Image 1 (tube, rainbow, N blue to C red):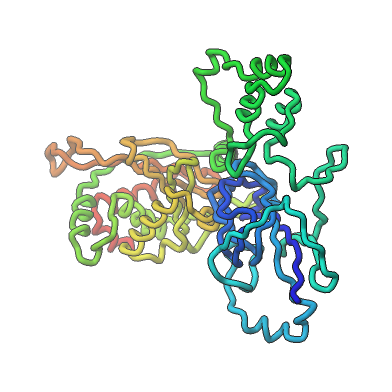
Image 2 (image 1 turned 45 degrees about the horizontal axis):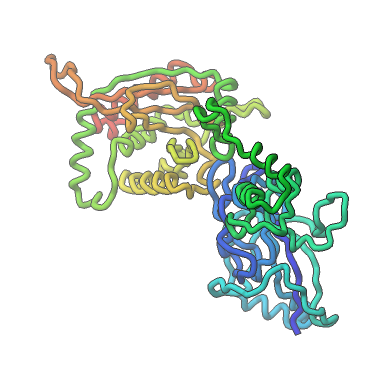
Length: 465
């Protein structure tokens, strides 16, 4: 017969030494049967929202954290009941494992051979139900951690008194439990109206207002629910966390670590815009999204060949300048959760049509909040398109670890000198910020001039290639 065991899955490090993540949502519930690598949750790191795959195939027995909770890396977040066939199938283990299909884990650090397949099935069971008598030779209840952490014993939090039935404790948050204690409310008598039966503060207040408690408790509840002062209604306070918290820290570090210099160049980009219109009508670009950013990105990649010093990093620890022989082109993207800078790997190897496709995929993924941690790391130089907001110029802050960032302004029809006459031309301002430890004024100026020359006369690409 098949034995079972309980396995705990702890929140893994989702990339670059991140210490915590917020549970955004659960895709499963207690009693669900899940397969290996099935998406069980969405978590928000300091950089992006990441889908969390299951490291086990089995039945969900407990969700240890609620959505909206910030969890430290290494803490348990979910428990599984899984089969343990080791005792009865030791002799056949090697052939069985060889026959199982292989899959790459979705995140670095955990994942294994697929043990089962199929859609999740809801099982009619709860943690409050008494467990059936264990058969010594068929069931071994063992608490183990996920493959990336050491096994630990699962026990209720130390409250100073024995917890004889922690599994049956009403679902609520610490502030709600404190409120109930202050009001003398037994949470066992309160019906929860929150997600999955979670007891909220309003549930406790409504229970008190029902007249089941002494007048003193009702008076205390009334004081607790009094509206905030008028001044508070004029303010909205939002917790600083996730992507916005990381971005703020990174920008402060960059601004006060790298000596920024910003140069500006206003360019007649009419020839580039005319080229863009022709490309949009070309069969080779049918179905591709072409924008001014596409041409600016290509101009940056070509200009870097003549000015490789801007594609570098300052290594403080080793006191070295690291120059990259590849270009991971970062594109600043505004998302509902804050600014991110995903990058296109080896962008310098892409033809214009492939670059346009990569840019479209990058922006769509970023706006959907699905950018992976891998795509947010390893950038070598960045572009920020402030022109889409109608802005002409700015002084962008360097993405940490990079030597330069180019801001492209709006394309405007402007009176301009053209062939010794004043004509209405399409004009753009480019703003280049660079790290003066790595890039001196001459290097930065030459690079910016090359980008401008390519946009003013796209035919210059042949001369610079």
